[in-house]
Length: 215
Image (cartoon, rainbow, N blue to C red; front, side, top):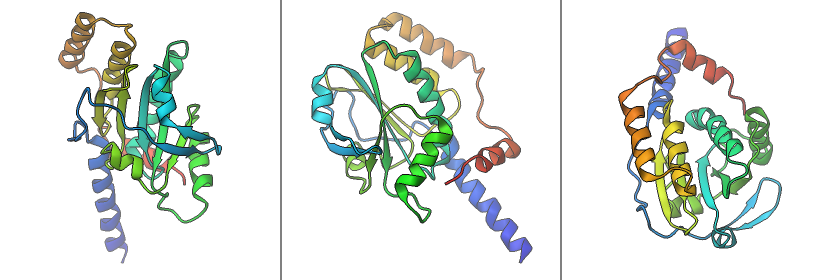
């Protein structure tokens, strides 16, 4: 029985690790297409009419996540860093929790625990029935979608590996007009040619990530 349990754990780790290292998966949302309007309530009970948000002319980042999603737990602190750094810009971030947490219990409480653990400061919206995720083809998690101040999709990324946040930051700065196209392209080239960031490359590191995730 112990051998069976051990093999089961290894299989689970393997399956999850595929998700952790996934990136650049296909997404059907087209760049420069119009962002979809929607209505959701936040974790705090606030009503969010996204059509109003789109009319305000901010650059908006939508981060689709779930409490059980390992790469989401790793990516979110990176998004927090970007959001905090750009506090004084016309930039907003919305986290969108897709579906109900898989663990039984009060789903808002579970999301709240994740919020506290990851020090999430940006609004968390509840997409309980995954309707907004379907609109944005964001059923594979994590998915990040950047919307420009013209309410059009500027950048889409599915999955997360270490270093993806650098590309995301460049795209946000481009959308805000902080970086011109030439500078952004140069930064992209440098990032591609100098591989200073690597994926989580040992099982022990990965296990530590698992141990730190509570629902």
